[in-house]
Length: 303
Image (cartoon, rainbow, N blue to C red; front, side, top):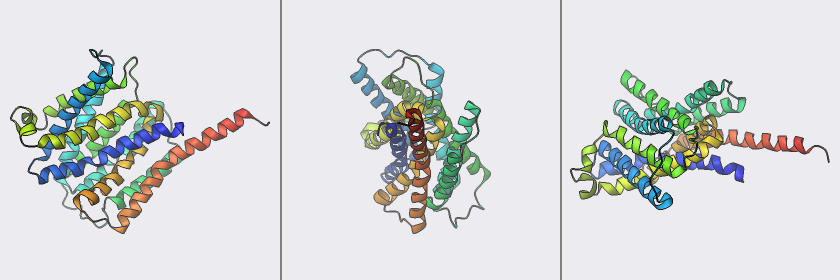
């Protein structure tokens, strides 16, 4: 069971990202802009990370591994920003498919970093994930002829950014605990996001005076604190390549959340797509368990 703990952490962290688009849509329904909701997410996430650090560590944070944490915060912020730009140029279903290119991009990054070729099970998983994403996102029959080139560029940028985020989190920072890493990653993320979104909500009263903080609290918890915390623990153990595949859990959760909270329809093809994604993302973990069991059997030898 212990060997499944870290993959499950990655799946749960990615699943947290899946509810964000639905929560942002609910915030928009209440009169806020997407930019205000995203800014509230990052600011509230940093505040929560600071509170967690004070409660758990009770001291001054010691900074280390600066470049790694700076990159982690940077890619955390840019993923949300460029994905938001992609949605403005193309339908959300197409934008999701573009974002999910991070699965093979993350695999490519890992292969380059470790100078290896993709494993057969990884290739099979990627094929299943791509096919499942097409069905689950409801892309079949969509008209893409009117999508401008900017949409494709922003969409691919979101995939590269998220794959980079996973890759950076695969690097451990020696001597740094998870709470401190969460604190500095969220700090750098909120600094970066302030240049692209709506930092004025912090001082003009919108965040606390108009109820935006409620959405910020939910988004900050599920979009910053939980995923960064769990990714920081699990990705170095699981590896960037497998983590990229497991992160595909985000899409089924996103579709399910939109059905439950926004009363959006769910077609039979989308259900098939979700099932295919779940199969594709579990194959590498099952294969790892099979190989580990085989190696243990060989090590024990004949009795």
